[in-house]
Image (cartoon, helix red, strand yellow):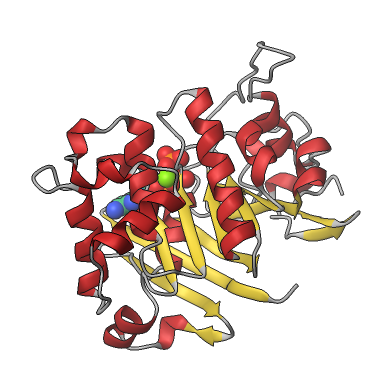
Length: 312
Ligand SMILES: Nc1ncnc2c1ncn2[C@@H]1O[C@H](COP(=O)(O)OP(=O)(O)OP(=O)(O)O)[C@@H](O)[C@H]1O
Ligand SMILES: [Mg+2]
């Protein structure tokens, strides 16, 4: 599969009084055309940072500290901002932000806000176009005339997805699009994303900390820990037999229908402002060996997937 989007050695740092917080460190990630890629990891592992970085939406005190982001082969980090805004952001790649349910302005109707997005980007917009977008996400026409507070959480989330689709992007970043929704509504949003992929040929980077949800929808999975990718491969491999002890812990921490018993991962993520040479997970890992505390394992291909762990 040819890549639509590819991050190569991407580094994204936030300047703080304690030094640079290395929220994304040497990240390689690929999203194929018409592929749903899942990105999982616990809170603070750098998932949103990575997505924002690929949309070129990192602002001070953050910065892209190195690496490339290729979109259809072009390094979009080298394009002047003006051109990127005109030719790429929202038109080729769009994002459903974390917490975007609350991203609508309260004083305008949903329809007016979706229409505005199209007009700002030089499209005709209009009632019919808005209605088509709402239909695409299974929302009734009447939603266009309503104000954000008149919608349920799930409806708002769908409406925001409709807005992100307004310019027919090829790539959609969906950052925790189902968090704060009930299980039934979560499933319906997941099914919507699958349909967008199949019917519209959109590629999606789906971010969540919920592995059970990811396994329902993605083709390829990336597990991120402390700013780095620690495991990646075909979704069924990563979810059915995760190899990295962190992925195993993350999976054990996910409730399933069969088992309601949840095991957490003891300990905390290391301070991202204090880079070290050892494996970032070593302090929490039950399989830790001497080598882990002196040398960081790189991603290595084992049995059809990539794992960064000295066990393999
Ligand atoms: N504006 C900022 N200034 C300083 N540090 C930041 C900033 N934004 C994020 N960070 C830090 O970068 C790291 C990664 O944060 P990020 O929001 O990308 O994580 P995440 O994986 O999306 O977490 P969550 O699951 O909670 O959404 C964290 O340590 C966070 O504290
Ligand atoms: Mg986040």
